[in-house]
Image 1 (cartoon, rainbow, N blue to C red):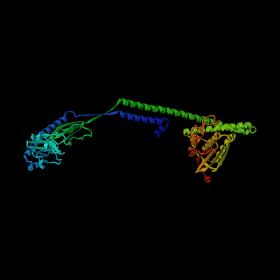
Image 2 (cartoon, rainbow, N blue to C red):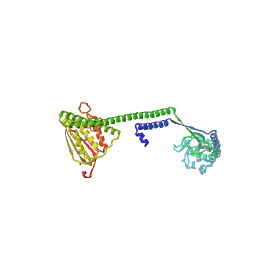
Image 3 (cartoon, rainbow, N blue to C red):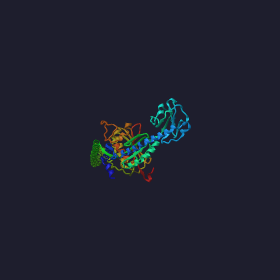
Image 4 (cartoon, helix red, strand yellow):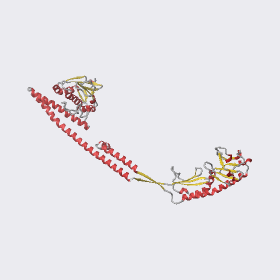
Length: 514
């Protein structure tokens, strides 16, 4: 409740909005000026490099052994006669997936190629036997004199070739099969390296791209901080390293300074604006209080003037000129009293302290008493009026509201209808509400001003030469009073003159229910 009262006070909402804006600016500014520096922390020492060197030594030791095994397989194959199904023999060397013979005297025979794995068959041929087949791998005749060596051709698998001048044997290789043997040889050196003790994550990747060893925890999903690579006949071996990352948060001083400055300006501006609003509200309260005091002070002398004027009229019945002047004083005093009532009501409405209550009365009698008070004013301008009542004689209704609204409507007729005008008042019950219509044959109100006339200090014509005085509060106060009492006040659409309709809620006695 305290927070709600603070917001409803003058300037409270301004301070709240300024505080929220300042908080948003400060949060956003700090977020934008925030910068995170990420620094990798490589392990101290050469443990990773030493482990990699030991693995390279193990790989390099296995490479000549594999080449020797392939040399022996090639020698055995050259001694065999492929025509005697010698090509169907399973190779003794690891990694041989196909054996092919190149014989100059025989272009190609069905038994010249033997595949030992589920791999697409590649058909090595001598250049002079080439048939432009996409599966062909063309070799020059010099291959027949090869002493045994690896053949590395882009786009082709790794192969080992050896010849004895009369023919050559081509061994198509799968290095990954030999790499598995190499890994078994590497495993002791990897275990001895104790890579698990290194901060971060380390991962060994074999020639086939598969992970063959990995430390805990698992590597993060980002590129490695360091990659060590070794190229061998078995393929590429990679040691990938992910080091711990140290994050340091820093704030850019110029951005933070600008953010804090703007935040202080927003808060200061909010308090400054709230202070001005409070001063303005205090001054407005003082003005309203002054108007109320002055209006209350005017009521007493006005009442005394009216009473004494009535007494003087009764006592000077023989002097017509004097009576005429006294009646004029009474009429103008009544007009001044209505202006004071409107000012007081407007001040109460503006301050939110006006209350309405239902009173048991005869509303037609209330309207007739108002007409009696306006009779001298209407008579002086030749205004003819009529009143018809179709409603009950006793109902509960907001009597003070009815009196002030009808008085304001008739005052407008007296000021704006013109000489010899006609005004009719009709009252009755409609849809459970008390309805009053005030219609005249004045020049009327333009359609574009139909809603504007209900605004404070608004008049249809603003010139001061019309001969009609007024504060511009009557209709505004009347509609607001009707709404506060739960009713309505509207300007009806007519072809001529002006017609206002007032509806107010009411309740009936058992004898007067229509």
